[in-house]
Image 1 (cartoon, rainbow, N blue to C red):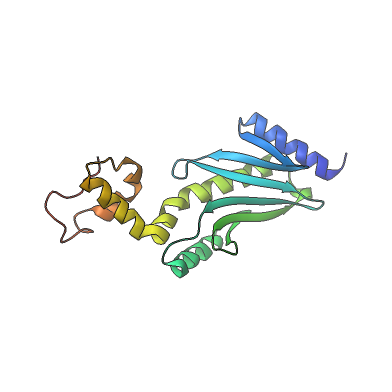
Image 2 (image 1 turned 180 degrees about the vertical axis):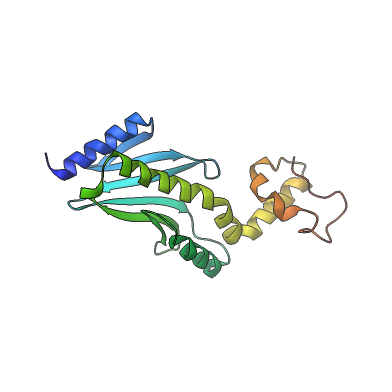
Length: 177
């Protein structure tokens, strides 16, 4: 059995053991669903090449605003990350990407890589949205409060609407429901 086939079989085994939802997307290519808290799910693509395992996961679409600030924030994070790093595609969508030599892949290393993707996507998600979509988040919050709608799915951004963040707003405030 080739090393490529061994790693492909290992991916299937690790996903089954850890009860991760996954599907084959081609020969030695897999899409693994990683459940999160802030980013509810991250699809991690694992592509087994002849010499390396390629790891790719979409994190968020291109930001509406403050692009350079977001890029700087991502690059600063990259210096402290394991196995994968943030990258952007031609339109500015944000991904986690990496390559690992097949010789270094075992069950523990695959678990570390999947854990890294999940951790970096999930723990960074709210901050990335705040930087790249702050205006849209504020508009959505104000729209929901004005109409008496729930702001529960915006709870991660409630700090943007504290009295100090909304100085000059009308009485009655905008408390999360």
